[in-house]
Image (cartoon, rainbow, N blue to C red; front, side, top):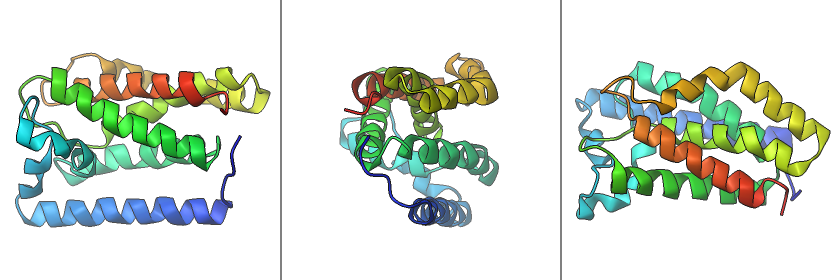
Length: 184
């Protein structure tokens, strides 16, 4: 495993990220969610770079807060594989989930951090077993027990929920776990 920063530094980073997401949501809220135009609109070529902005945008404060706790928990757990793997995993999830939605998503504006959340979920479910190390396997089992119900979010059950972001994020997380989960 690569270097993992001290807990205080990890928590400072996660707190800063939470603050950034909340500030963006406040600005978005008071501008009638005008920032949501920076979401992913599938196959809209000039907007392909929105794969990097869409996860920071939410449809409402409740949408943000539904994503915020699992995002922060999953990021922190993923960081326990070390900064190098955390960074590679995060970039993989960000890019592949957004590209998957851009290429194959239904014609709608896709926003929210849930694709990233599902990416970390996929990573955490598989990576513990890739390490073959008991503490990490226990972490994977605990994530499965506590958050396994989220897997239903991979199904198209609500037309206002981007199951595509969930699905492509989850697949990107599995790919990251398969590639780097053993600590390489």
